[in-house]
Image 1: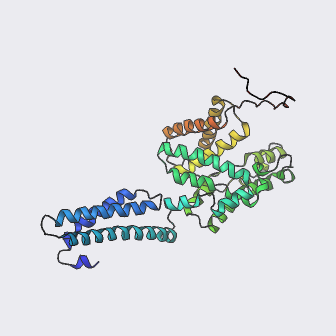
Image 2 (image 1 turned 60 degrees about the vertical axis):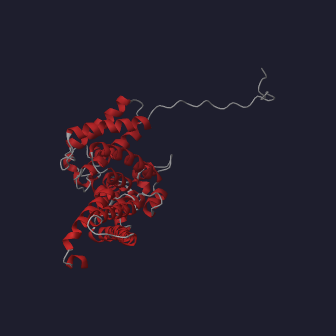
Image 3 (image 1 turned 45 degrees about the vertical axis):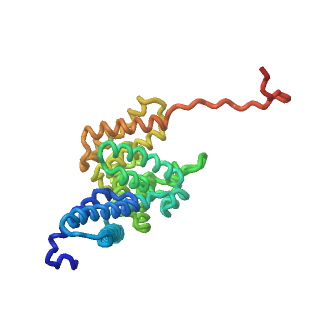
Length: 348
């Protein structure tokens, strides 16, 4: 602050303005720590250029003076970027902000919560990876925050790791389904609980608060349809005997394009995994049906997704799923080697 109290403080304004603008432009969204160093160097170089441009024509300088000014500019640039990095970290933690560096840090495979997720609910973890791929690509195409979408998708079902055997993707093949011994309402409650459980885990591991939105909103206020239909069948089809709110997720509905993308990718991937489509037409029907169901239930009403966005999302999902669920050629069974067969190449 002392320079601002000097009589010629206004003379320093071009230096601070130009070097700061260059640093901000180079820093961009700051998705790597080294970008702060790069921004600091850019700020330093810009500062040196400004100092020489404003001082050299008007004030005679020897080599030592030039080196001193250049050294001061380099120190100023690197110090500014270092302080900016520290401030970003501490302010994000204090104010509950979400930064790109935070998202990249928690999305590393060795992050403790992801390791816990993988060990306890490997089936759900693999599903989340596929959902993250689907949602991220679509987010890029419609101009949404692709990094936030991907990381939110990685953690959206993390609550299932608390009681993994209640979810079919984690049950060993041939094992009795846990839900067969439960009443429909109890079964629905066990499934719905993965949402608040996920929030508890997110808070415990200090995930950015924006990740909570993905956990809470990825089912919106939808109904666990399978359990509700079971209860309705047991009641002889009389809807007055079934309290539908027992089968409804607490919500809220998606409130951003990113969480809406997650809802659509989650539903699409789950259906594609269950139905195993073998051609593009079937895949497209699954995607369109999932989007239409969300629209009819009003789950997308609070988002800013346009019809154009939904068309782009549909094409993106179809492209990714077509590569994932393509038909495979059956490998021939290996036959025993013929005893005494000549394996030496034939001479020509």
